Amino acid sequence: MAASLPQDISDTELVHLARTALKRAHCPYSKFPVGAALLTESGEIILGCNVENASYGGTICAERSAVVSAVSQGHTKFRAISVVTELNEPASPCGLCRQFLVEFGDFKVIIGTAFNTKILITSTRDLLPFAFTPESLDTFEHEKASAASVDTEGDSKEQAATTISS
Image (cartoon, rainbow, N blue to C red):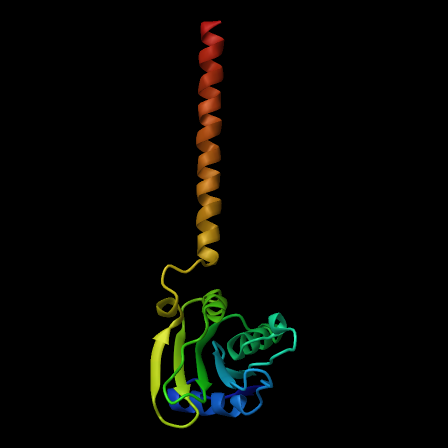
C-alpha cells in the first residue's frame, strides 16, 4: 500500500502507520507480528509486515517486505522507516534487515511498540556499523583497477629492462 502524505510526517505518525501494518502480519509460526512503514524520498508511505512460511527460509520480515514493495513501485531512496512489534520495549531490526536497509543508504530508523509511546530513533548506519555497502564494492573496483594499473606499469618496466639488457 502506498499513500502520498505530506513531506513533514512526524515520527509518531509513521509509528502509527507501522502499527496498522503490524495488524496484517502473517505469523502463524512465531506468533510475533512486526509492522513497518517506509517513507520514500518523494513522501510516499509504503507499508510492510512480516510474512512467515512453513519453509522458514521463505519468511520475509516487515522491513524487507516494505522495501521490496517500494522498489517494485520504483522507489529506491528513503527518508525513514518505522518498525513496530508487540513487545513492551522497542525491538531492533534483525541483522539481515539491517544489512538490507543500509543497502539503500543512511536514513532514519524509528523503532516503536504497538502498546505504548516508547520509541527509539537511530539510523541505518548506526544500526550496522562497519556495514558492507554498495560503496564497499565501488572501493573494491577502484582498488582493483589501481592495482591492475600498477601491475601493468611494473610489467612494462620489466620488459623495458629486459630489452635494454639483452
